[in-house]
Amino acid sequence: MKIGIMTSGGDCPGLNAVIRGAVLRGIKTYDHEFVGFLDGWRGVVDGECIGLPRHKVRGISKQGGTILGTSRTNPYDGPNGGPENIAATLARLGVDAVIAIGGEGTLAGARELTNAGLNIVGVPKTIDNDLDATDYSFGFDTAVQIATEAIDRLRTTGEAHHRCMIAEVMGRHVGWIALHAGMAAGAHAILIPEQKVSMEQVAAWVTEAYERGRAPLVVVAEGWVPEDEDKPWAERGVDAFGRPRLGGIGEHLAPELERMTGLETRATTLGHIQRGGVPSAYDRVLATRLGMASVDSVSDKRWGTMVALRGTEVVSVGFQEAVGNLKFVPQHRYDEAAVLFG
Ligand code: F6P
Image (cartoon, rainbow, N blue to C red; front, side, top):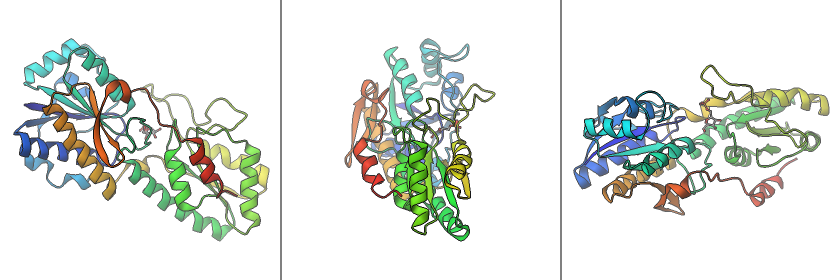
């Protein structure tokens, strides 16, 4: 078979390891041939691809980003978009199936195209770890590691100045990165979109930590909303391409906490640093296994399915189950972390 691979949506440490795992499995076990579409659905729609022989994937599993490039293009966009056009483009290139590596948006697009008759298998990708159908997604472990290291650094400068330090991490809809990095770094408060905590409570945790002689550390996910507000502070309009501008809640929180606690407070937004650089060993292994399994799915013609991690095993789930179900931080996981606050 000739298989096209594409990476779509926000990049994520481990994407190259998926590509390498898929290509090596496909060539060595099945004698498949591979091409890589450039910049997500854009390359599929425009039929722009490069050959992916074995030597192209040599040593790439430790590289951040994606050798194929990515974009948030919709497969229905433009005069060449939509299932009929894409089917014609794939036929022209001799591509029998597509492995789509992406998050919610990518997989939703893949589901529609599969329903229209295209041969697609999905691989879940998100540093946010918010896809319910997989226990963990690659990129998450790396993001948590980067955030934890940064928060550890904020702690020492905070302690030197007797300041309250706020670390804003990614997490638009869910707070997994904030929860794990916050627990790992010993934060005195963790604020996540799933939990509407009042500003009074946050100030109380900060004050409690300060009175115990600590430099208070607050970890906030970009999508957090205080109890008495209904709109994420981080939603600051859209960029020139119509994408929501996220990030910035830490900068809103700092003066508010300063006013309420009387403590000098500084905020740091970690932003895209959490998505850059080399993937952790765990993410490389998970991504490689998912890439290999995606080729098994293609070889078995399991169209409209996504590979996923359940416990320690890689399984195959239908797009129906994979799309539209976000994995929120459950209450008991937040309560467990909250024992450590203040
Ligand atoms: O979905 C992954 C993610 O990193 C989110 O955590 C974050 O809100 C968003 O992407 C940022 O998107 P962009 O890279 O388009 O600014």
